[in-house]
Amino acid sequence: MKLMLFAPELVLLLGSLILFLVSTGKVGGKKARSLTLGLALVNVLVCFACLRQEGFLFFEAYRIDFFSQLIKLVISMGFSVVLLFSTELKGIDDEVRPEYYLFLTLSTLGLVMLVSCVELLTMFIALELSSYSLYLLVPMRDDRTGLRMQMESAIKYILFGVVATGIMLFGMSYLFGLTGTTYLVELLPRLHQMMGNPAALIAIVMVLGGFFFKLAVFPFHSWVPDVYQGASNETTAFIASVPKVAAVAMLIRLTALATPEGHAIVTLLIVLSVCSMFYGNLVALVQTDIKRMLGFSGIAHAGYVLLGLVTMQEVGYATSLYYIVGYLVMNLAGFLVICKVSEHGENLAVDDLSGLHKRSPLLALTLAVSMFAMAGIPPFVGFMGKFMLLTGAYKAGHLPLVILAAINTAISIYYYLSVVRVTYSASPEDRPAVVVGGVTKAVSVALVMIIIAMGLLPDQLLLLATDAVRAIL
Image 1 (cartoon, rainbow, N blue to C red):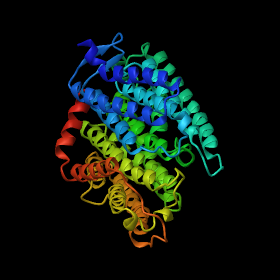
Image 2: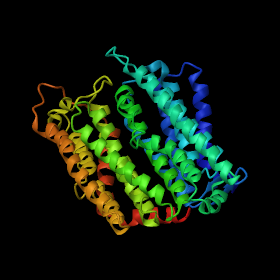
Image 3: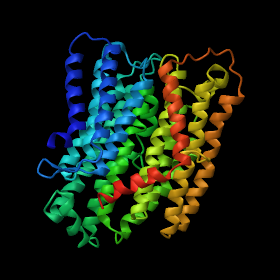
Image 4: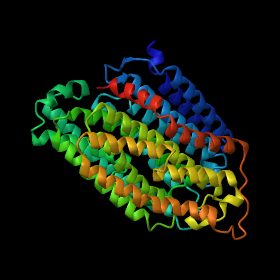
């Protein structure tokens, strides 16, 4: 039974050790990818088998419950999807591809461990395992343009990451100093008695800052546009989607510590939500690089996710969880198209998508569905997610916030639909057809169907999210 509690982590850990051994030899990138993909698919099955496991490990610093197991399943599925459409891995030199897959797997392992951590130091170690693996993935890009953007991006990423980590660790030291414990279950009752203490509020905010950085909430967003543009398309697809699921899960765990009486935390979340939405959407309007546009739109989506947290209620947390899973699927669909249209792994401008409906009708449809969903147009998951977030915030008494969020949704429609317009309206200008393999076709169709199904039939998924949130409250 104890082994089953830690089974998803063991699969990734053993896979990482095998990939490490593989990387020391002369195994090619294709074999390394096949090994990693097989590992990822096995891990999805293991996560599904362990979905209802419950228990504690490592002196109760590691908690297995339905909340953590559900997030692990989502993370593993996102990891698998990235590997499925990264068949060519155009932006990474073949000589370092085994190492690339090793660090990608290690980052996933860190995220999977993170969502089960209920002790501050364990949480810190898991977060750093995931983060430093990502820092190493960014400069691995084989930049044929000669601009060497990946080096500048990697330096900015690690510098901002180290600062965010330092702030979070300092906040953890405050929490330990105030409560005398690093266990969240013991922190909870003691923090309830001192929520009026400025030191307690500062400590919680500093710890939240580490996860705001992962989620790219304003003003912790500065790394986003450069890293998105400088990293390879496949790396950006992972960074832009999978870690954000874990970040939201941990924000839910930590925000719940503040209780409904934590008015200062609610005020902070409202300010960050509004700033993230306006900044992300307004700057995205003028972007010509498709990855930079998706980077700034991701900042706006982080603001939407915070709408659920400001309610400080079970239904709000569940809606945020539902929305970030929907965002994972929408984002992966968009990046799948970017990876396939990019001929040599180079960055794409929005105009490079011109005439895609003639060059590859399936990819054009996938991109259109992704953009419609992100814009919040029915019947896709983006609409249903935003609708439930706005409804929950309204019922919690945050009418001005709801109005501002609705305005931002209207702003975002312009740049999302401009991508669809170029895809379907502009002429192909003698651009070559995009060859799409059978696996990519299957993944594209599956992502489109999931985006539609989550929008049309949200009830069961929201019930799952509610059950998961209930397990930690």
